[in-house]
Picture: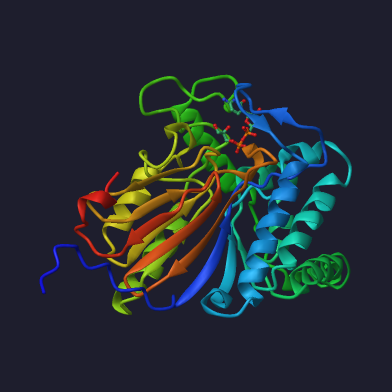
Length: 338
Ligand SMILES: Nc1ccn([C@@H]2O[C@H](COP(=O)(O)OP(=O)(O)OC[C@H](O)CO)[C@@H](O)[C@H]2O)c(=O)n1
């Protein structure tokens, strides 16, 4: 007997692994406020409640059994606490402790990237002492505290064992010069109005030559090893994946580098609290900008749980974050290009 109905696609096998992702928590124990232009509400205390819901969901994914128990790690995409904390004594560390405490409960490693708000709260030295990876089951917070205390005592006595920078301001001054070359405003946080120049604002930043050459090496190795790579950054780099005012200063350099390596499948970022998505037509790379927790009302959510398969990633979004299928094959079926 002939059937005219199309066969449903075969069910997917269990994912290889699953991970959580969240961006721009920007927690502060202060009343709600607005962004700089006064167009978006910011929920400073509420962001911790939203993180708690994300942590609960990931925790049950990590411990619930079945394919979901393959949750391996969480990616925290930067701006973990808001710059307003730095105006009150001790509030930066208190806020950081509160957020790390919620992430600790998930029970899997958490990988952090730094956002611009980390630099409003902490010196570069302090940030270097916070491990970029928070280990599972409570050890991240403990390790951070323990390392800070040790740094103040034994490490200070035997400071030759610490890495040090003889001219710590050199990189900062280089960055400032680049910014001033492209932004003539008195307040460098005010983006230039000229077309294509709005990204040259102080609340963004760029990738240094050292960082790009490190990335080039990692991607070359991954090409050789036939690995698939997700790049995680606070700042987005594709002009169609975010508001151009939020892009990294040298976004074109990063895009060119990604295009030169076949291994990259996805570039994940935060910073633009509205979020965004675009699949690059040349490289096939998915550029995903996650919605920011800080501008998400208390009745909604903003986080993702991503399942990785041999040929695709399936993003299960919550609240403002939409579900998304990201195939690795390229050229794509037309529906994958937005
Ligand atoms: N047009 C602007 C925007 C911001 N500022 C000042 O820059 C600092 C950081 O701004 P903030 O909005 O808190 O940074 P986010 O990382 O949350 O968001 C990034 C962009 O704003 C998205 O558009 C702060 O001191 C602002 O007052 C500014 O002067 N002019």
